[in-house]
Length: 479
Image (cartoon, rainbow, N blue to C red; front, side):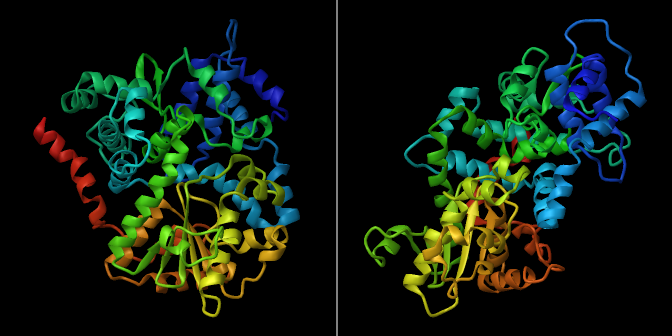
């Protein structure tokens, strides 16, 4: 087995790029009930683009040679995770595996397209995200999401589920005809070329994508192919993998705009707050907004975005996992990565505001993020960072186990659950706190707290119009 990164690069350089890519696709396409190490060929693809041969001669790729390369990437730097297990226990080691693998298990539901239409187009604030996106891509947010939704359905098809349909992994003539008919050839062309990697741009785009700038961590990073889930291969448009496309379906607009528009991030933070307020209205509960909360606090005090009743404090942070803090989760890296977001939300905002406004009763906190974070509550974050906040360590009124972290899609599910009458918000928070108190029932992500409930049918009124606008059946009948 190859030991060093230089050996792996040299091995990749020995074979044709096309043969290596085809071997990766053969691995993807082989249907099996066993879990696959998808991150290995995705990492290999990046390195193929960067280090593949530019001149001949090259060797013929055998199955044995590909397997050796595969195993070398899979077991690259084996001491990294084992050292965390030895020195800090399995929880931090699992944080690394979570970042490396769980994004490839991203779920997609049709309501997630509706959420994106609401966030990026319908809601308005100081800056027009939809206009910026259309100027840069040639597609409106609504058209982009409509095409995205249809291709997502196609990409998710399995040969075993459709034995009479030949599923090749490529965009077939049939799906292209449907896209052209419903959305027009120009929009279809724009969409495909926006999301497609080609031999001409593959190496350039691969070089841009590194969250840590450390070669030894690259097999643990998210793949840059989430921004390019199509590949021009064998003179056709290949869908890299359904799991990659699932992540694209949820986060492409966010990832693209964050990379291409410096004004996006600030505006998006405002949109998240507006969106969360729609959920509060949906639950028909009593709450206060930031401007009214300020009037209750001393001047220059930190504030939170919302207070439900008098004891549930909500703060929105439009953030995502930081690569280095996720791949090498030392106390210092985690603190430096989240001191201005997650840690600030608890120590400087929720903890302090609740102490001033409700010091004698039990309080609860919710921090709503954009993407899924590893932690479902603040207990571990509190333990290693409490010394950084020596004057804010009084937590008797709001212990860290009472403060939860959830992404915006989990917030939608929570709102749907509470609005449907299955459980009250405070009952759900108590259930989550009790689950997390023992290792056997502890949940790594807050969305796992909802697994015991019926969540199949969304009935959120604040997404109804967007869901209707993106209804595929309506698109077909009106085309």
